Length: 174
Length: 260
Image (tube, rainbow over all chains, first blue to last red; front, side, top):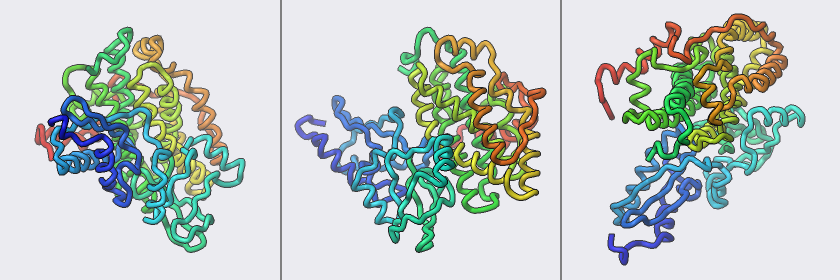
């Protein structure tokens, strides 16, 4: 691509901010924090993407969606690079993304509470209950309980509100 | 490109062997757990098992993908999963044990998760960059696996008389397959020496602690250490692996190169 006609990196980020996550279409790929870098290398635009979960089936769809969105903007030479480290963390979900999740009915992740299978259990036992207080995205009550550590997608856990009785997904921390 | 990142001092053959071992553990257990899809006692458990299987298969793609690069013969993770024979697989025998009932599946998962968790935790701090990266990713997922399997082992152990009996039987039955997790051979020695993997035996104390704590809480009796089965790590498997492979590999065997 003629360097003079290239879109700026900021412009590309702006376009990527309009690509929805295929599983949770209310948030974009940039809200999710999985786009780690965008650079021009010679005449090729290189987009670095990190997977959320290693087995997440949405990963290939996400890559396809990025290529399609950029192709629609006239960018034909695009290369996607996978970056494993640093591993994706829910701490990278944007503040705006968290609000969109809550509006959509998914309780957003609480920063810095990533699971440590053993430690978390010890904390639970010592404190008598979980160190996490997950607010119901429907009524806002914090009287909620975990149904299962695994929900409708790998990134979510199943919870239930004991006040309004609504079952809901919690975007669990990793 | 791929091989340039490797430390020159690391024995390539040993590294490949290790990657097959860790990758095949994830693959075979992932396949076993996926057999529950649509058959679990409750919808939430069905989803949880399917998610666990998905994580393990995802990790397999990373481990076997790296194994293919290290081998340098152009084999992909899919080639390694679908086109090797039983004696080429390097998983420990524990992960190929049949599912049995729900409790036995969870007991197997817990015994494996506690070890997997400690192994990945150690690997993510060691020197081989690409192994450490995959371990860092997998560790986060496996933390949740352990959190769940441990919780269910306790709840079913300390549940009804029937669930307690089943969990104790599962534990007694699976216990002789746990020794292989801590076995070491020349491959391990070379990689320990190179700082790529932890000494297998060094994980034992931590594993004992996690297991003992959960068993006590679940009112289950830890079996005495007796004869321990082994062989999977060098390709000598039980008859169960063949049945797994015949199902898992059917498509690529019957229709070589099929894609969709």
